[in-house]
Length: 161
Ligand SMILES: [Cu+2]
Image (cartoon, rainbow, N blue to C red; front, side, top):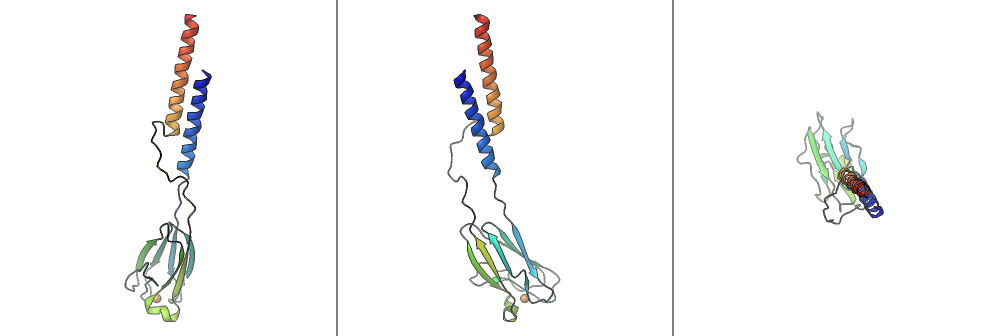
């Protein structure tokens, strides 16, 4: 009986732990870069993000056509336009500093910089054997079942004796 209870506790604790790990999901952010009222500056002109985050170049109804082109071609919003909605996601492994310009207005100082910081290490990245009880709810359910069976067995033994 004690062994069964101990086993049940292990199952419950394991299930709870897996639930906690599953809830630690990454939370990617999107930073929007637009054009300020001078028509010749990005706003903001610099941003610091984390790997996995997205930068969205977004403007509409601009007096002048703009684009956003990374110095090494990492991203490129295309031809300069008064309406732009272009997103680029910096995946893991892309930590670093990225300079970008608006091609028609680079000489006027319409430039920007994105700093991408490394994402925290992954919590668990190794494939694990799939067990039948891989959710806390199932673990709890099976625990109740085992306890019930144990109780029934104990009652019968007492009843027979
Ligand atoms: Cu421009």
